[in-house]
Structures are given as C-alpha cells and as structure tokens.
Length: 353
Image 1 (tube, rainbow, N blue to C red):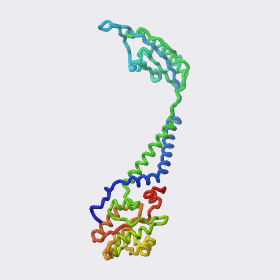
Image 2: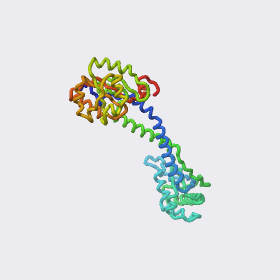
Image 3: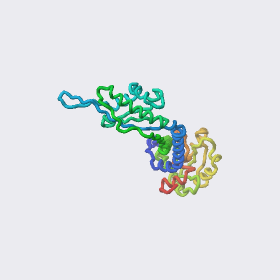
Image 4: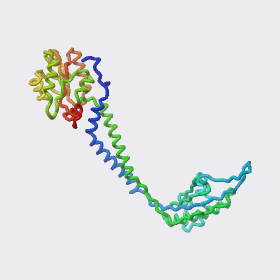
C-alpha cells in the first residue's frame, strides 16, 4: 500500500452513494414524520382543547374622546392626547374601576373587574376601543356598560379632556373561539421530526466507515478492487477473474480476510471455495486475531484483501493493512464480499435498487 495514496478520512464525499442510501431509507423518514405529526398534534390538541380553560365571552365598546384644545408657541391649535399605553393603563386604575363598581348589577371584586377589561387605540387617539372578557356573558355585558359610565365620569376629572362619548355601546357578548391550529401543529411536528431524522442519518453516514462499493475502497486506500461478490444474486466472476489474472502476473497469492473472529475456511466456507476453486489462490487466517499466521502469509508473493461490505470496519482495515506493511506483505488488490446487488446496480448503472 502506497502511503501517499491512502486518503482514509480525506477522500471526497460520495454524494451519489449518500443519495442512494438516503433514498432507500425514505420510508423510515415518512414513518417518523407521521409519528412526529401525531405526537405534536395530539399534544397540542390536549393542551389547547381538552385542557383548555372555561369558555370566555367578549364584548366591545367604542368611545370618542374630546381633548381640550390649546395653543402652541406659534398660536396654532393643538390637542392633548393619550397614546395606547396610556389608555391601557387608565382602564385598569382604581380611579376608573371605583367609578364602575357602583354601576354593576352583579357585584364583583375589583381584581376580577381589573382582569376583565382592556383598552386600546388605533392611529386616531380620539377613538378608544374598550374590550371586556369574562366567563359569563351576562357579567361581561354588565361590566361593559358600567365601564362606559365610568369613562364618562372619568372625563370630568381630567383637565386635558372635555368629555368622553360612547359612540357604540356594548351589545350581546360573543363567545371567544379557541384557535387550536391542531393541523398546523401536526404539520410542524412532521417537519421537525423528519428534519431531525435526516440530520441524524447524515451525521451517521458521515461517521460511517463501511465500504459499500469498490470505488470507495479504491479512493480511500489507493488499492484496486477485483470486483464485488454479491450477497444475493449472481456475481460477475468473469470480471473478477480477469482482473485477478492481470494483477497476479504469475505471483503466488493468498486471500486474507480482515474479519478477526475465525478462520476464513471455517466462518465462510463459500468464500474459501471461491478462493480455491475460482480464483485459484489460498485462503488463510486473519492476521489481526492470529498474528502468528504472518509467517505463513509472508511465504506468499502478495495478498488479496477480503473486505465485507456494509460493516463498520474502517479501523480493522487500517490495522490489517498496517500489519501487512510492517511485514513487507504486498497488498495486490482487494475483493468486496457480501455486497448489496441492488445498491451496486443503482450506483453504477442508475438502475432502481
């Protein structure tokens, strides 16, 4: 193995392979998205509908404020005004609430009255919108009429105001509808769940050092691959044997597996038969688990490295290559085994895997 051609961890990202692998997991994304939508939607529905507070009733009044006219330094008329923050504060002051309480048909505590009223203005500060919200419709209407009376009395105490007129009196309160947005919550749940899963898959793929196609191995380690033995389907043995005949150049080669759990002829008898009967090379122990076998491996002119596809074995490959290099064992080529035939078709021929 040439040190300069080893690009492990630095080879360009194979976006085509990544896209194919993601497309084969799209069903997982769809399932997770549906579950995310159901969970978000159900949680939102329970919180905002099932466990929603008691219904509220709202009524509105429109007040018109006549401010006192004054003159500025140039003699031009000007008017006093209160902005929205001013009216929002006035409507909850004791000064106004104390005037409203005597006009209530249904007696209320001042704090309950304070929590029920709001006031705001638009661009014209002379128009004040008084809003009353209460769990009981009859009480909401009673509060609104009492507040209207309180504002007219309040005007007499303010030197900046000539009078406050009720332009539109409060009428029958309307129930405040709960805007649940359950479907929107479910949609956001689907989006967030699918995005989170895709990011997780992408990170996992970035950290994945498994070999799926021969081209990845060649780019990463600079070692040619004879081809791929597929797990299910017919392997292109003609291509593999032709490549081996060219690379062998009359050398006595051995097939070395990187799997460090047993003898190759014990753990994978078909592969051992392939090595002997088809490739006409010997299958030997893996040097990682059985380093004493290096003495046997050194008797060969070179080795063919057997790499199982789809297994996270980057460190194991590195260790095997390093050990072979230390013992001056030439790695002539590699052979990908247990490959996914559908993935190979999609990657090399653009056919559906």
